[in-house]
Length: 633
Image 1 (cartoon, rainbow, N blue to C red):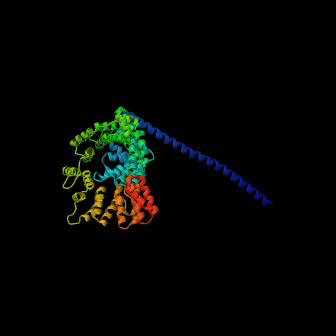
Image 2 (image 1 turned 120 degrees about the vertical axis):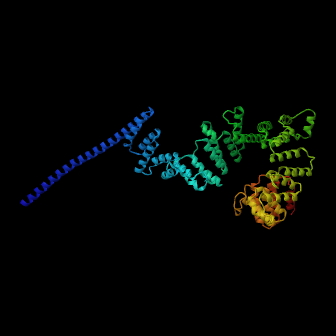
Image 3 (image 1 turned 60 degrees about the vertical axis):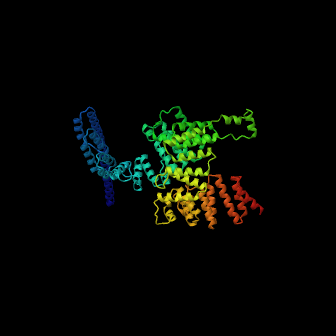
């Protein structure tokens, strides 16, 4: 019993002691918490006070600088250095030292800061820029290395390229990633444009197009990306960017207007719409610009070389659109303005001459209309014809002759000859061939070498009038001289070796002459290069080059058939028919396919192809004969 009471008493005492201890601990904890909070509070207050004090010191220093009290400003700056607490405060001190011309002290501030906080992006960027301005490009590159991939990445790019020197091309694949990193960090579209230029330079237009930005804020940027999209054959995107450039232009800066003109933008926009077959939209934007120019040229730098190159193009394009729309009065007005303003612009002179010749032809009137005209009566159609604008052929010829006196332009000379032949039907083929020899002699730019336009015109004329042997002699001498053929090797061996250096037209002539000489293997190889490889494609892709002419495709298909390669012939004919722009060429292709089907006893396929040919050329006599022959059997 006694033992039990002692035990209870012992437990009670222990409980009292624990309660007392708990209370003491609680008080102790509260005390520690209060002390800790007080410490943090006073520390925070001290930091805020330090920052407030530092900012006040900078305000005083700025006051001294404004008042020209530079010595006082320097004294206070030295004191303020002790209170710098982050990168921005050091940059503030640096900036004020630079204002006072104390570049050495300014540099020391940054070096001390980077020693304490290496690779700090803000201080590294400022110091790299300082070193660049000081001409210490290698040191700047070392400091800026940590800026790659940051928003200051453009400084690394600048330092990198400054170290390369002027002998190295900036636009090569090795620099693509540097440009791109600089763009990612800075969001400056100029860096992205450099990336695109590298792709364009290498002919990789699709990759360049993939780099397009989400938005453009300056007209020169939108214009640049419109050019990229146009070269990548993404004409809808090209038109969209050009429209954006036109929208931004009225509110753009003077700097932007020096980089791109409204005439350049409209010209590209018009071409994009034409590529999309939206000719009405193309004419609308051209008309708006030309109307504005004719009203007031203020705001346009008419002396600019680019403007003088593009503006006559817009006038001629609009004139041809008006002619195609049946508006001869507008066509004549625009062409007259073009040849008056740019008297040596060849496309305008040629279009002017074509219009003059067409409007000089007598009206296609039937007997009834001629009877009415003789009686002094005119129908509405006749009155419209009489009232429509006409240009004298003599005026067009005079303008062409005067321009040729100033500049012996081959294209204009050929157009002048064509006008001469059109107006004088009495000229014989011998006289026309004599004109060719005279021009070859007059325009030679080296031994057996001529301007490409004159060379092609001479070959075409000679081949047209049965002078195939003379044409081949000219061709052989021309390519041998131009491409430095070896006299030790066969002409056709040298041609096969140099064909990739030829223009597409030269390669097509070579293939034609090879076929003319019954060199089937050589002709096939040369034609296959023209048809499948001249546009940069691989020969085994069987994709027709955009550069080759449809007649060359027809010739190769015909050679395939003569060699028994019927399947290849039909495939090529079918592909050529899809790309042919001329109804005459399409009809010829379908007729030749009908011949192959007829030889294979595939009557239905042959009749179908004859039907296509006749639908395209109703008066196609050979197709009619073949169809009638097939129907008889």
